[in-house]
Length: 240
Image (cartoon, rainbow, N blue to C red):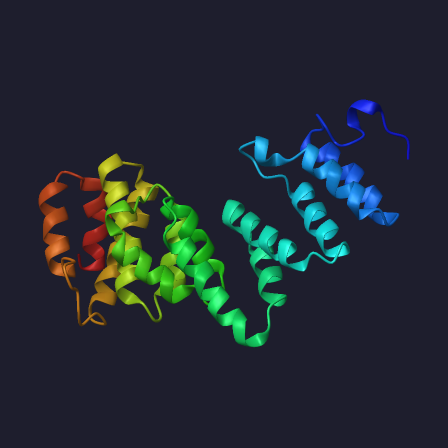
């Protein structure tokens, strides 16, 4: 493969270009050179991870028998992207008696992410993440924002069976957002439906902790949003 002097060691290469060259080198059994190109075009210089580069890096390290470094790279890119594939691959490389601890470490890492919505998106989808998602919603309830309607709709749906308090908080944040922003009758109807579901869930919650029970929450929004006639016209027929 012919290369120009300026790119012979990957210097100055963009990550995707470096990844493409590295993948071709890997196919012909030249992993050392592949790794050299990758280092010269590292996405560490960019705020955005580059999937092709990451996959080529791990493949090159594996081809060289540098399995510990390949594992470290998987974890690093999982930390950067929260992509499930990196965590799954990482766990699959571990002995059976170590993967549970490593999975818990990953869940703890995600739960502490500053970006709550990124954390919840991962935890709600991860097979063993639902309990932690419920905990995060309760613990970080002041950060909930019903503008993320798709996320909290999914959260309520998945948590409603076993985590009624967390599901209630997910529903309430959408109610609060709709009432505060005064959206159309379509949003009013959806918010009323969410509030009705909260009412149904309330009978299953025995310990509210510091969270206002349903009747206290309902009284508060009746007082604060008494003039939202469109909303209350949808809510009253539901017994609210």
